[in-house]
Length: 245
Image 1: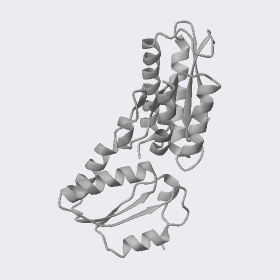
Image 2: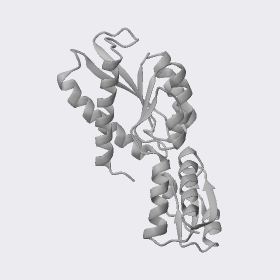
Image 3: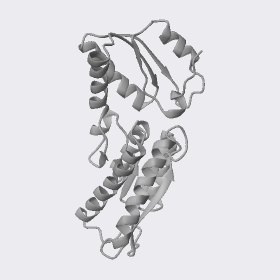
Image 4: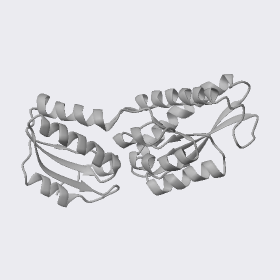
């Protein structure tokens, strides 16, 4: 997991990119008609299973926002309208629709979770609203639309690196996969498994668990029965806590 310091830096870089995008769009005011400020939206998991990442991203954005507004942008202040996705794709899409229809924003930061980004992407694309994710990693996001961006590595890279490390450095030859059943978990596991098998390794079992699950003892028992050299386990903090049988 990336450190808080790392996500603070991501937030600052992300806002800088947004400002550049607004300038390139030559937008003297947002669609709301406000000539004193530039408003952008943010849909982040401020509560729920991915809240630790959403809160850290917000801290980074708030830090960058303070620094930017000390000088202003052509005499205007930058305002971020935060919405809580609650670590849920359906809630994230509702939040995005609100920011577009009610607040008339042109740029939205979010989400951290890949499943939420993929759910929001068609809405942002249809409305020609820039959607910039600071944490989503599913490879499908790369082809989600002309207005969809991210400031994070793809699972296509992360999964491959993880597999090579497990096979060559840890010397694991038989691996079980235990993953959260959403776009993040399934996407990362798919790349990991494909790469691991190409290297000559064996995936002895694949088990998934629901996001926000509080009991995964059955899946753990199933994985343990295969006696793997190691377990590849992508998930969110609440599910990743140890819950041994």
